Image 1 (spheres, one colour):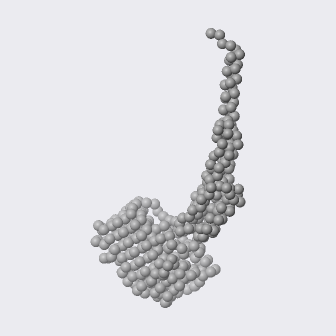
Image 2 (cartoon, rainbow, N blue to C red; image 1 turned 30 degrees about the vertical axis):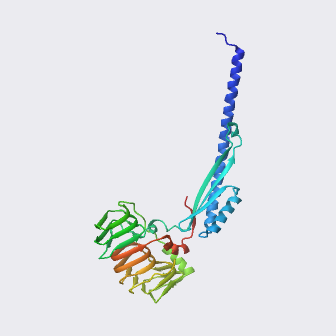
Image 3 (cartoon, one colour; image 1 turned 90 degrees about the vertical axis):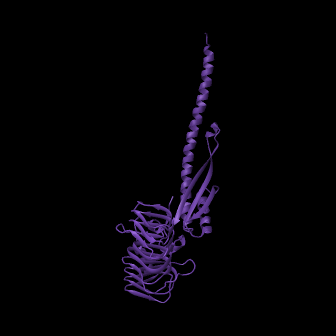
Length: 360
């Protein structure tokens, strides 16, 4: 068969042209992808900056949104499709942005535009709102079980429970309700046929107990009240600051109100028969750094957090209702207990736990 050399040259030219077109197109695409990668990095940096700046204005959602848009605009992304959302009782803001980029060279292959997305979440405070403070009841001891003795009264926990050892409920015919998760480093033992637990997670991980005593001390010295000896509080007590006692505290008060932390280096004792809750969204932290917190009464009603990181919280007799959390190295319940936790009961932390950080 005879093949014309001229014909071969023509075919080769066509193939070469096609290959060159494809090579040039792919090269153009690679170049544009590199440019888009740089633009995506710029968008992510702008979104990170917007989230961090906006978080300064929390919990005001309107001011936070305005700041986020302003920062994106000042960084050259004012025309990006932007969404600002909030979580964790308006202590966390998420900024999401989508921007359309035009390819420069890749149009040869029919690819003209690409959408680039970026997201960042910043939080105001929250350094202490993780770990132990995620639980309605937290027992930090690695040597002792968390034991609940009902003594003829029901137990109700709205939230989750953690023990760095095991958990034991001695309820007989009394009921135990935990709406969240019961997680323990050791075993879970339920000596009652009347239990309702959202989820059981035995053999979970150890969780460290936090310590914010220095923050409270500095706050009390700069803006609150600092006592260098044992104190007794009588009558109604309104808290609108940090109170630091370099010793132990005896409470003969009948009513608490306000927002703040009452701190003692040593033991805290409640001597009256009833401790009333404060109205509205007030939240108090009763904090013994090295001692125990003991309720010597037939029943208490408190809105706030009971915190003894190195000691024992003891609630004897009666029915105790805590609109907040109980967090201690050891906890002794002898009688009915209701613990009802919510994000609002950690509002006392805002005065000393206000740092801004990216969480994702």
